[in-house]
Length: 148
Image 1 (cartoon, one colour):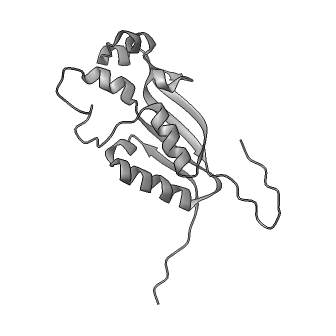
Image 2: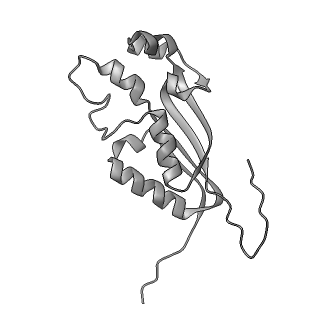
């Protein structure tokens, strides 16, 4: 009889990969990550911000910043997807702040390169970064404290 191995992990990191699968595959991927994470385990994801990439691409005739991308998400969409998977977003940041560029509708590679750093306003940045947690599941009436 063939048995499937049961395992769990404390951390799953998706670095610049989530945008390379379809929306349906992304939902399935997050559900599978939730399944294999230990209680209190963390998925970490970074991905381009569609709010910025759509401005960068205006008039280019291209749909995505990388032709291998299947979808690019906004901050609100990512928070929603993480929550739909039964995970709790605990930290979110943006990389490469583009406040003035987003306001003016002019996102360029130069602007992106000239605004490095980690910021607390992901919706105003070029890249989105998230850490979530699989909630602790109390068993047998035991009270479990969150790590965060």
